[in-house]
Image 1 (cartoon, rainbow, N blue to C red):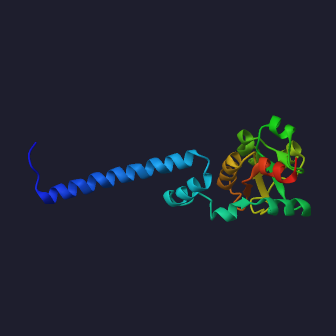
Image 2: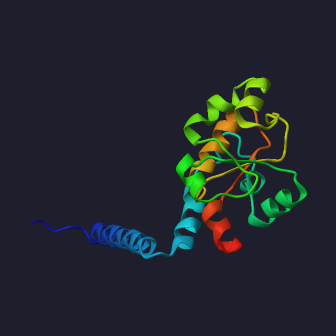
Image 3: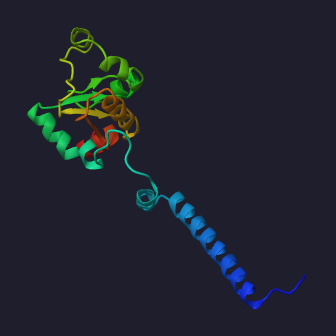
Length: 173
């Protein structure tokens, strides 16, 4: 080995310590995230993700909460679409929801008014309707459904992020 000047030694030591500390921090974050502290991961993602995707004016504008959905259902002012598979829908559902599995949602939303009415026994949603809500079991598929609907021009549609699992828990089902 050859001797290093003292200023370079200090820089090298500082760089190595920075690397080790940042690596340790990342390992701690991964470990904390694995051990069911989902809120920490959620907060971390909020600082590390890019801007919203197409159609997302804001998270609040695109998400219907349990209490909002309950109010919409009690007033009869909702077009609620369950995008789970038919077997999940048959096993338990939110009243007044219409089952359109995610895999056939885009095709269904493109149907003519008459075809939609005949297929689903309800009036078709309008592109400007603000009472369109998608839900699944836990929010993942309904988020994808929201993306599909927004891409097709249903710009005011929302999704119930809590999904049927939250609904059933809060309703005592």
